[in-house]
Image 1 (spheres, rainbow, N blue to C red):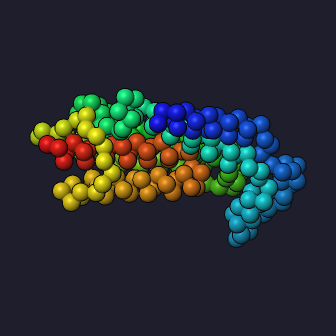
Image 2: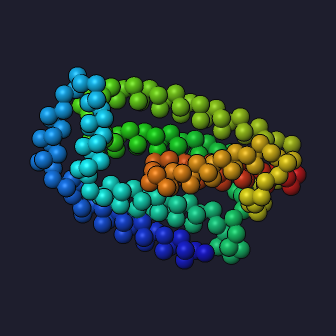
Image 3: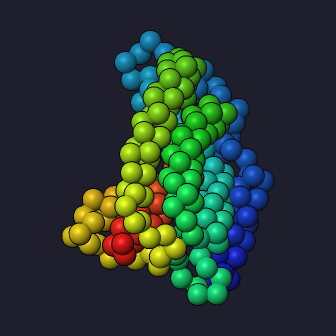
Length: 221
């Protein structure tokens, strides 16, 4: 299994390097001319901008994004997979599970921040769009909610929680909430990968591992 993660890392590095060597636009001069010709006051200015971006961009950012996805998932997979058993186990102690929950919230918040600033650097937003300060404020609020959400789930570590258990994705009625959250995290992770969104992928993968770890520990009390 470790070789699969190594191959994924190599694929990710190849995609990332390939993308970085590609031009961003098919014809940047023509793009800039058409972009500046859009009237910001027109009702369909945003629609015209989106269509212009879609028709003018090369696959550079797509290559880069999938490269980052492969690299992040290979790194997370390599860390959570036990080398000897070739199986996924929950962290070795309750403290490590708690750290995993807080890390999930932190990585998700950082991913949302990266999404905003990388989008700005790539020119995904027109110059007449709302200030980035609104996005930053929204991310700060979302980050606070994510940490509260993670901390509330740390209460499940009380009363005989069993760490260092083999992780199973099989749903359980006894722990229906954690089963549901694990499934939802995995579904969101799959959607994130299909949409080539490297900024939410790592956080969702960690959330899925966190909820699955909590479920495995609660079932084996």
